Length: 258
Image 1 (cartoon, rainbow, N blue to C red):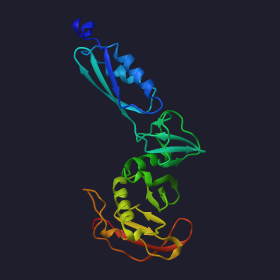
Image 2 (image 1 turned 120 degrees about the horizontal axis):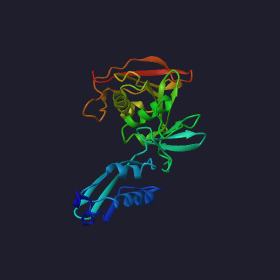
Image 3 (image 1 turned 180 degrees about the vertical axis):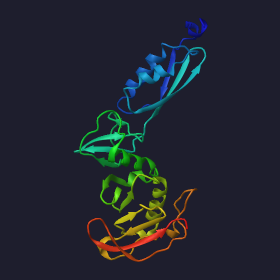
Image 4 (image 1 turned 45 degrees about the vertical axis):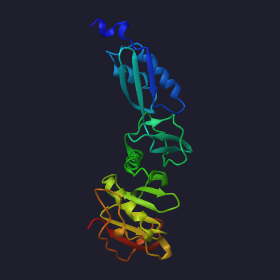
């Protein structure tokens, strides 16, 4: 027990990696200071995590020791999936709803308009939490193409594609399946010019062209790029739909996966 905390195994060389952003220097200093109060035989992860608790960008840490005096600390950062927009003031938000005030908001991040800034350090309920959940489930390659997410009656959650259609998701259930269906329609050349894609029922993804009278996507021949699901066996039916603005137009419906 004496040897475990003796100067013979005290932490003297600390290497911190993985941190970035405006608070990177402060994060490194906080971890180095806490680590040097420990030994390589008595690493106290709780103390290290508390040292970086004031920095929401830090999701977790991993520690490796090198007997007798070395410690490597790998910082695992939260990755923003969107930004809350309160009257033009934007705050990056992590997949678990953590607000990351110290992170610069990239123009490519989807925005989530809110009327009142949330209190506390995390968004845990309400339409904003549902929008964060939707963005967290989105394919990584598709995320930069989304300009914003909001809740719009009667379509529920709506994701707006930059220079493209709105995607109607309904509620926040079956989000993985809904994104697979939406990706299949977006990838189909027949979806060009669509005003909306409705994946409220992910098994019957419907795309509409609004008031221009043009037919839209048939997702049946497009792979969703997923090992678990693909857009196959589509059946298309002509009909009349509404694009959310009161304008009627053509719509097509694709049955996904059978």
